[in-house]
Image (tube, rainbow, N blue to C red; front, side):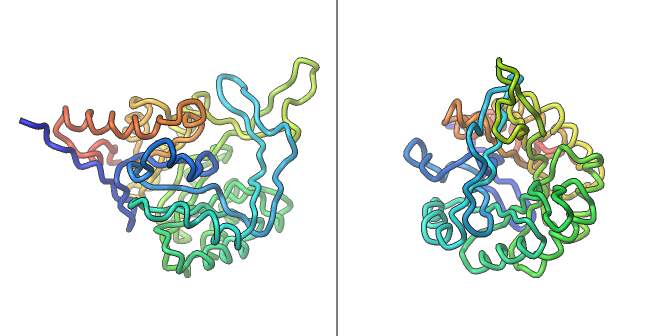
Length: 300
C-alpha cells in the first residue's frame, strides 16, 4: 500500500503556496531551473527590483564571516523595463506562485513599482523595507514605525497582496510589524540580514562598503526570536520566517515559533538543491505523523 501524499500547501493570506519553502529575495535566479524543477518550490522570488539602473556597491561585495555570509551587494538593478522584458518572463510558467520583491528610496517609489506590477500576472509583492529612506536622511524604512507605515500605506491601493520584509536590526520588531499590518500589509517576512562587519588580515574592512548584511546560520537565533515576538504580537498574521535555514529542523523551529512558511537564502549558494531537499523532508515528516504542513505552525 502506498503512503498517503501529505497536504503541503500553506495559505499566506490570499496566496496559497504549494509548500512552505520559498527562496529569500536576492539569493535566487531563474537559472536554477537548469538544476531542478522550480515548480517544486512553494513559490518563486526574483532578485529585488529597484527603480532605474543601479550598479550596486563596488567589490569586494561578499565575504565569509563568523560562520555565515556577509554581503554588501547594494541591490544592483537594470531597471523596470529590463525586469518586465527579461526577468519576469523567466519566472512565469512554473506553476507555482510568483512573489516579486521591490524596494525604493521613498514611499512613493515603492508605490510606483507596485503599480507597475499590477497587471503583470504576479501573485504578491514583497516590500523590502530595509532600503534607506532618502527623505529621512538615509534611515532604513524597517527601523521606524512611521516610515514603515508610510511605505506600506502608499502601496495599499494595489489589488496585489503585500508582504512586508522586516529587519532584525529594529529596536522593537514587533512594533514595526504591527505598524506594517495596520497600514495594510497582508503578510510579514521575518527577517532580513543583520548588519555586520569583517576585517582583512591587514586590518582593513573586508567589504568595500565597510558594513554589510550577515546571513546564514549565525543569524538564526536572532531571527527566530523576531519571528516568535511578531507571532505573539500579531496572532493570525501570516509570517514567513527567514534567516539561517538549511535543515528540516530549522524549518520546524521557525514554524514552531509561528511562521507558516520559510525563505531559504545563503544555504542555496553552497548546496543548490537545499530547497527541494527540504520539500521532500517536510513531506516525509508530515507523512510519518499524518499531518498537513499547515499543522506545523504554532498558533499563538
